[in-house]
Each structure stands twice: as C-alpha cells, then as structure tokens.
Image (cartoon, rainbow, N blue to C red; front, side):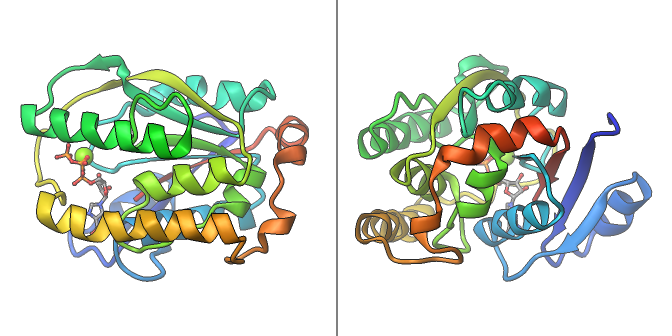
Length: 231
Ligand SMILES: Nc1nc2c(ncn2[C@@H]2O[C@H](COP(=O)(O)OP(=O)(O)OP(=O)(O)O)[C@@H](O)[C@H]2O)c(=O)[nH]1
Ligand SMILES: [Mg+2]
C-alpha cells in the first residue's frame, strides 16, 4: 500500500476476527455506527472525512473487486474532471456473475440511469471514489444499502459523475447479503426518500446549501492523501 493511501476497515459487529486481522495487516479499524451496508459506508465516509482525506475510495470486502485498480478510480478526481467516480463492471470485465444477478443489476442500473439522468452503466458497483467534498456532503438515507441512493444524492446535489471500467471476480467464499424480495422492499422506499430529500433540500448531516461541488477539485489537488475503506 503506498504511503499516501490509508486503509480503513469498517467493522460491522463481525465475529470472525475481521478487526484483528485488519489491524495486523496495518489497516485502521473503526466500529460501524449502526448496522448494515449503508451504515458501514456512511461510517467510513465520516471517518475518512474527519481524517482529512483528499479522496475517499471504498470497496466491498468480499474480494470481488481489485484494490489494485484504485489509481484508475481516483484519477478523474485528482485531474479535476469528476467528484464521484463509480467503477463499472459492465464497462469493464466480468469474470463470472450469476445470470439472475446480472439481470437484476441491468434492470436496477436502467432505473438509476433514468432517475439520475447520467450515463450510468453499473448502478450497484461496490467500488467507488469520492472527492473530499462529495464525501462530506454525501447522505445515505438508509442503513441497509447505499448503492442507488448515494448516486442519486450526489448527482442531484450537482457533483460530477464519472465511471471507469473495472474488473469483477465472483466471490470465492461466503454468501451474498442480497435476497431480492428483501432488497427491493428496503431499497425502493429508500430511493423514493432520497429523491424527495434532495428535491426539497432537506438538510442531512450537512445542510445541502453548503454542498456545492465547486471546491472539490482544488481540495483534491492540494492534499494528495487518499483513504480507502472496506465494509
Ligand atoms: N456492514 C455490513 N456490510 C455488509 C453486510 N452485508 C454485506 N456487507 C458488505 O457489502 C458488500 C456487498 O455485499 P454482497 O453480499 O457481496 O453483495 P453483492 O456484491 O451485491 O452480491 P454478490 O455478487 O453475491 O457478492 C460485502 O462485500 C460486504 O462488504 C452487512 O450486514 N453489514
Ligand atoms: Mg459481493
């Protein structure tokens, strides 16, 4: 890991020794505030912002994404071209993905693309980068997940969206948390909430009025530190 990258692991009440292993490997470990994937990403963003990261990158912890692709993800932010970069598996290379998961990803991606009005090709990617300012302004409206609501929140606040192609490798062990009925039951109302929230300017942990993307590129250029987080 380069010196200017800090690895941050959000430990969501795990009982498998994750925290000890992460600490032994040199990562900083923080306890999740709340429970769930959305809560874990929210915790990671808060921590990274408070540490003064210039760019925050987060990635799933099941080994499906390749952290070696981090430089490609942060490049558009460091170059001042984007505030929020999503690694797209569908624009890149997918080693293996269950057909039903592929279909679900495609359908939900079309929904995110239409709602966000951005050229989204992977609405559910687990590998993303945010400028310092986008990370500070991001509001994740539910604890269960972040995938769709984070994109809607940031683009509706005016942060510039970009994608880079990434590679995806199907998990070798463990079990997906995604169960379609539960997923839709939790995600659909949250998406509606996220749309309402940004439409009426409801303040979150920062007032939306201070959340303009104007300073992000400059901030990224002045402090080269990057935080990467896994949930
Ligand atoms: N904090 C927290 N993180 C979770 C929880 N469940 C899953 N995650 C994280 O969320 C990531 C995405 O969940 P996955 O189950 O891999 O979902 P997916 O990638 O859409 O599905 P697969 O393709 O089957 O892996 C995981 O890699 C974990 O890092 C949870 O209950 N709490
Ligand atoms: Mg996964």
